[in-house]
Length: 170
Image (cartoon, rainbow, N blue to C red):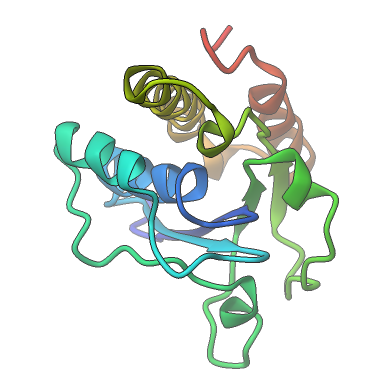
C-alpha cells in the first residue's frame, strides 16, 4: 500500500457550509490518505454559524477553516488536485479554472441549507441533513480502492456516488 496522499478540492458558491462540511468530513474520515480543501466561486467573508455549530457538535476542528476563493487554487504554487468535486448545483454551472493534470471530477450537488427559511430549529435541521448527506457520500468515496481502479473506473465510481440519494446514500 502506498503512502501517497490524494489532494481533493470541494467547490461551492459561498464556501460557508457544504464545501466546508465536505473538507472537514474528509479530513476527519481519512486524513491519512487525503488532503482536503474547499473553496467558493463567490465566497462570503465568514463561515455560516449553523455550519460551524454542526462541525463543533460532530467533533471537528474548525480553527483553520475559512472561506476561500477558488482562484487561490489556480495559482502556480497551489496544490495539484487528484479530485475536484462540486457540491452545489450553481457552482457546477459556473466557470471554474481548468485544473492542471485533469483531476477526476464529480458533481455531488445538494440543497443549500443556507437558503432554508423558518425557525432556527428548521434551519439547524437543514444543516444536519446536509452534513449527513455529505458524510454518506464521502464515506463511499473513502471506501473506494483508488489505487486499484483505472481512471475510467474511478470516474464511474465517483459519478455513481454523485447519483446516490444524498439523504440515504443509496
